[in-house]
Image 1: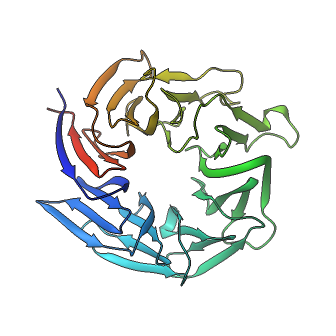
Image 2: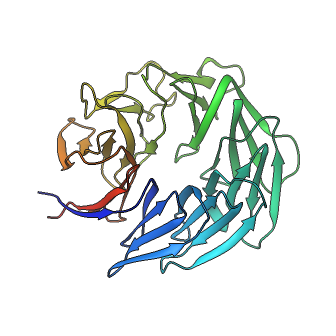
Length: 329
């Protein structure tokens, strides 16, 4: 039976992550808590808005209301990477070769490992940034679509157009697909290797009763799990045209409770599912088998993260009700 080590923090927790085997919890106040032989705290921001794990460096990248972009190391050391005074940094992304993406207003920026910063102007405000898995390329989510920029090259971006407000963006692990979350309770996808004008270029993933705020690719990239419904909606991406014409899996269905966070296991075709009432389940893709990891608690689950070996799961909530599930127990 899984065991839960609880951690009660003050206020909204934006993200949970592991650096090595140490769980980290980034709070909206700007404090980064870690459970490393006791609870330790790094004051990183005066108001934290975004936090992602940089897999290449095993660090965290954070953005804040103080206009700062920080790198948080496994020992809690905070390093300033960039600063845009009097601006809110609500979008951050970690890329290959030490590159870091961030945005404010209509400007997306990429900081390279040597400290050089490249700027990319958009016609509308930047809502999301993601790095492609191959090559130094970014996708920028904005109103009416996504802009694809090669970071090292000047020139016009590739525009992936679809009407509406796109609020987040992700590349499939093999780089064949770009998927956005939208304001209108839907996902939209583009197949990057299709011929211009081909029917397979667009993928519409609709029917959500709420906005999709959490996305997670499975270990081999064959599935994309999403929140925004009373079940984890898991789209198949193994075929050459992705989910076109194929129904998604619906895992962990609960009649009247919404899924608010999803996190795919690092090795198995299993997804952790967090709900609006604080409950956490794990569900297997092959047979929909469920394991209860945590009973309902205080506040909706905002973020979850697996340890590298897949034996620990950290979870965070909007009420500061956090913890670590040990699946070996």
